[in-house]
Image (cartoon, rainbow over all chains, first blue to last red; front, top):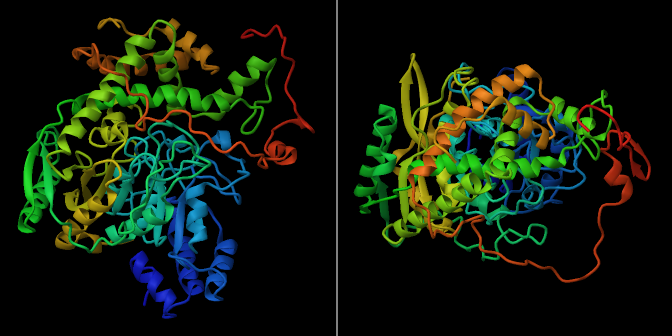
Length: 485
Length: 104
């Protein structure tokens, strides 16, 4: 078998049955990274030596588990006690975390081999990786286009088979949007399902770790490994991880698909509209009940998100002071000047914009008008979902309005960039689960560009959501498509 | 929030000060335009009547998550100082706190 042209579960099983060794598989991925990384800018840092040692330990029977020997890539927002954790920021360019993120520790405890850390928008703020202080990741389907973001490096690594699976984080769509633009599976689990310990905080009431993979089954396995209550994260949920979480081939007892007219905008690209039509047909053919639901506050999601997320960011990013860790200016006249110059030099423009927007929304005289009003509308958005999930098991909608845009197209228009998240942010605001699945292709300038469809499920109902997603995936078959590198 | 109010350059200077961000005049000008556009879009929230709606700060309705009151090891001093850009162990090093700099 070719270990770089397979699913995570197939590779895991092949390693377990000694058809291929973890050392062979890991070396095959490292070789592919050597060939393609320079052009795609997917990885910041590759841990070749450490990865080969982890692989050898699996082959020697010293490391076992549900992911024994499979090579995985990690978004550089998750702390590892080895290498650097940069968040693609000059601020943390030389930062070496003193502890492991719980999600990464759980992957390693399950025998996973960690290949390296992937590029992203600085501090996860962006939809294209163009806000990375180091490089812009290229979309493997068309290297003139963005991979999406903020977890664009992890998405492109998966799409280009530079890992067997990868991990990202999703605050307003940062896993699902790049998954859609790169033609792979990407999931944001329910808020609280996976510990945020060691996830460098952007917006603490929205951030969630999640997987990218080739298939729904692979995503389910990764979710199962990373999930669970963590004493190190007081907001991780004390909710049992279902035993059938990764048994995605079991047919759900019923499928009721909700369609919300608010997500069927005329501004959707024709390929996105076609993907929706096809998905609806697949579910009808599978015997699903398709019902119309209403999410009347959908259009208020972006304004709420850009108040809540920036308010939380302005508070979370106050820790970067040039004193304890991170970039420090060499021009400071006094302590306040040290803060102001270290932060000005260490942060990129998008991070500065969001810190200022959040500070403004929380500042005296504006708190009620902006922040408190946004929290009230957030409640209305959640109420919409609660009502919808009484009528259906999953809401089917597009992940994005269009396929990947060109590098540079939106960089100086923050508002246009923010509108990329229009179909993804409400899932984070409500704290529910969402998964993006390959939905076919748009042909643009002679290139095949992936589009995604999204399924949203009620909080802590991932077991059902994944089974419903698998029904679509098996019928649509898009997961087998690969870009030509 | 008034629908016509847009953020001014003075507002941005004030917010930058609160945010501890040193900005050039050119940056103040550029960010003012961009933030005004975003705030204009956010003004859409005024269309809704939110009287009596309970604000939602967090998806999980949690209160007072406690762990057992048992002593546990923390990060030791050397580890805590390992990433410090300037230090005199066991202390972090900072410039004089009471200065007469322009932003003090």
